[in-house]
Length: 91
Image (tube, rainbow, N blue to C red; front, side, top):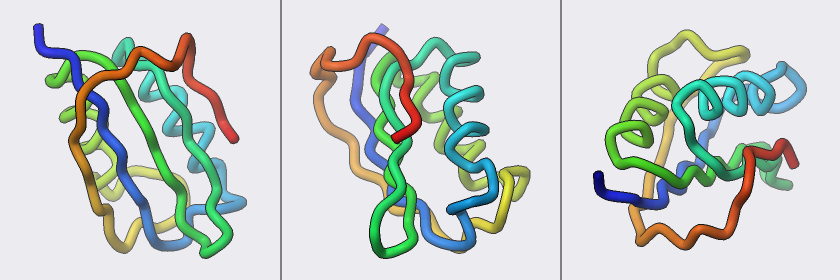
């Protein structure tokens, strides 16, 4: 089982609509740790760590059209797992 860190920047109408809460719930269901953070430019930054397959599934969910609000685009970056989270936070 390969451990990774996924960072995804989500653009669209994703603030003030329950998007971070929804992302946290999906991440916890997948056994991931990390955070979903509102950015000043209106995007949400999602950082998730755990099994690559679970991170890939979270990315699919972010792009699924089934999220709260409206997702226009998701930019992703894959890096090494750091183990810096103990749960999944909304920031």
